Length: 127
Length: 486
Image 1 (cartoon, each protein chain N blue to C red):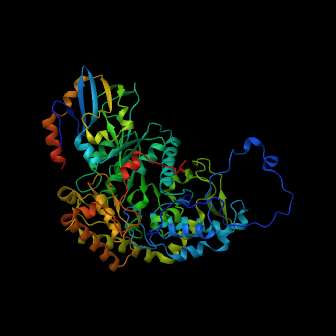
Image 2: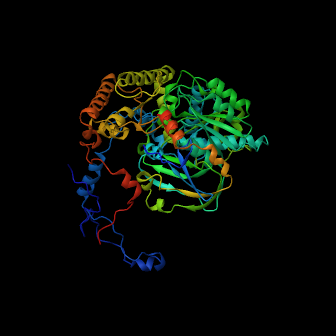
Image 3: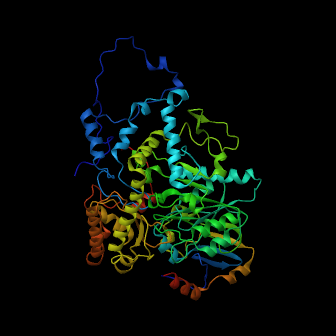
């Protein structure tokens, strides 16, 4: 399982990468492996205001459809249209396949998320 | 192997399956009879085949069917029990098949009596006050139940209850129905025993909760031991308890949702009461309610007044109509026949045997597959192909596909979502020990093959008319319509 350095991780297996107050959010390698082959991704609307824990979209695999939750609050400023055409990218390179970019309204929320070391430990407990 | 081509591909121009006698009335051109705007530009591209080819085509397809009448079908959560043929006999009686829903009530007293009496029986079985036979299937029953929950709170002027709680092990239809009914869905996690986590439930049960939807036994095939406490927590918070009847087969004649504290129940007649599923159906999802909720039942309700059965539409608090006419009536006749032919003792025995059968298979398989929840199961159980996946790369899907080579319908896979590589197995009460043993042997063989020859499992099925399909490509790039080569 790949866990990338420098990212923030949530207990729901989302990753966050921050660039200039803007957060790229996607799902982790652990999550894509548990889901299996992703066949459909529902993206959020640009301009949507989200609280931490709100649904950022839906990732559907051959096994199940799962909500993706944003671990950070803010406004959706970009969505990854490429995933509509090529949902399998989430399986191939989960840390490049960001789902949406969120303009952070409360950057302090990032401190509540795990770093790669903490996330690794969290995953090992999940089994 | 027979040729697997569409009937369109068998078509030859000019080949026909009928011959009409010469026309003995004056002929007119089509455009003289139908305005041009309604006429299509060309003739439709329909297959042109002879009668024998048409018959062979469809008989050939029918021989590919797999059903309860052809073999063992342990599809968890679906209760694929054998459907006794006497049910079909009763439903074919002319008095039931030759009536029209618009006939005067006086002329269909027998039909109304069946609806009324079936309602009474289901009320007794579930501990509810009254039933409506209107919902066409389980999920429709869920939606109807949720509409009743909404109407109930509204009638009390309580408009702040926006949330429906569902456990994370719930059937996917529960959150879907709640969303459709306009509620917000909040998931409640399960504890290490596979039951609703009581702390999480109590934390969630606030004055914004309209109700909880619960399946008991739950989708792991485990009885919710704390059901009394769960019911109190929800009722104390002012919410209602909805019973998803998908797993009622486990408790028939033994315990009753009404006694557990549930306020609304739906039953799947096509699961628990021996009527056919799917294409052999249709389904039927009657809902029963407590005395307090009777005024909200959908219209019409069959009543017995002055020695006659009648359809009561005068119910001001009712949520209104939810289906045309009176539910899937002939299915009701089949379920009524089933209950009468089983009798109270027979129904209880069915539940007991369903539970014993499931435990027998579980005990035999737990040495070969991971059993995530080490408890006595009810009518179904969940085992995991986690070990096979980690050690040999053989997934639950591969095991399911390989079962087809052994002549069995696969169990439900990857559900409930809280168990990894889940295989959910429900043998039902109608299977003999010999059948169960054959299935057990097949499952054990597959576990051995996963270690000795994983490729044979991963590439299965091998003995079916069509081999492994590319389900991922089918989902990502669906081709929904066949087109003739231009």
